[in-house]
Image (cartoon, rainbow over all chains, first blue to last red; front, side, top):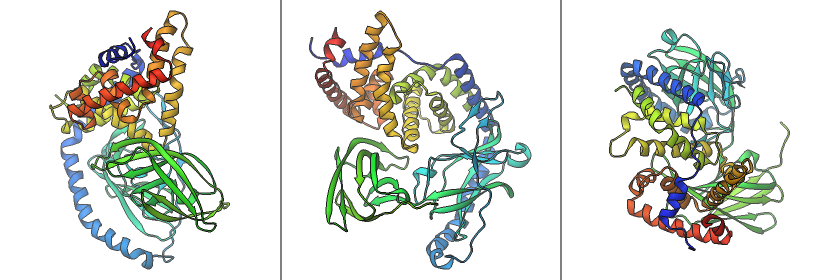
Length: 317
Length: 174
């Protein structure tokens, strides 16, 4: 027999080794689900409605303000209201009742006050890095958090511009914290230091600062997923390009034109992976290598769209 | 039934299906966090669950999205590929005797599946590992049943080509 038939393949794969969690892992996960389920269940009815109403109400008030401030702030706030940087957050493990540590390399904030599961990089104007953020809070759940919305605001230290990032429902404790919330932030408008402030109802739970990097490099509907501020001369291996759209080719070419020496180099990006975002956008990710021989000005072209990109020299901070 | 109890019941029923699928989808046996996140997402989204798909199909769909989100967020698609590339040989490195032969068969076939383009790999893993029907795989991928069948047919054809190219065929077919 020289061909593997459909059914034969399925039969062979059905015979692959089966994997399952250990008894200990199953018990731990079952407890976590049970805990999460009971916390939500007990307060779900009034609390979620209240929070949803609060969110809608606050959005209705804040949206126009944000709109006007975001359109006028470059002029009105530049250099006018510099804010002090609050305490810088730190990475620390969440520790549950049994002493098991969780997320030591991504949980970021102030121990015993407030923390969040941070992305690898905070990127300005990027929804990806601020979606699905878990926030953990410490305090007296019934007194401090129950039936109260969690409001998170960010103040851009350099300009003093304040942005409302999210309003979330506070659920019960998890991983040793007394309350937690899942939310997505509004993307940061600027790069630089931001002070994040966490309010449960009218009470401040805590605040800490983070550093937001400059946006990814955008070329038409494509995004080269490297922050502009770390795009230096060098070789980039397995860089990712995300493209929004349908019926995209299996491979795309990134043309890099050196504006100073009129030198063109083309790099192929492939290994296309497709997915659809929760809001229905079709996205494809391509992977590839490219290099930039020196700093300077370049024109990047992808799928017939071009963008001038400055490759900087690394500077010491 | 309370939401928490419903998910607990499904966890007991379908944990192995979800874990097994995530292991083959990510190429890593360390999927405990993804399994937990899958069921917590299911808990949060239970009100959106409609009975037009089975709980297993729904959970596999959430598991797949959870894995995609995780790797996308961490920007480690590359790591995923590396894991997939290197995980298979490890499967048989640890075993001895007759088991090696069987495991090598799996490893070769699994490696060849992982070398297919993502849509082919996706549909093969949903049909072969998650053991979903064409209709159920279509629900996970947002495709019609016909598209699943056509893609699966093409995927198997491509897989055969790869197995021949890699001279794996004789090993697999014995």
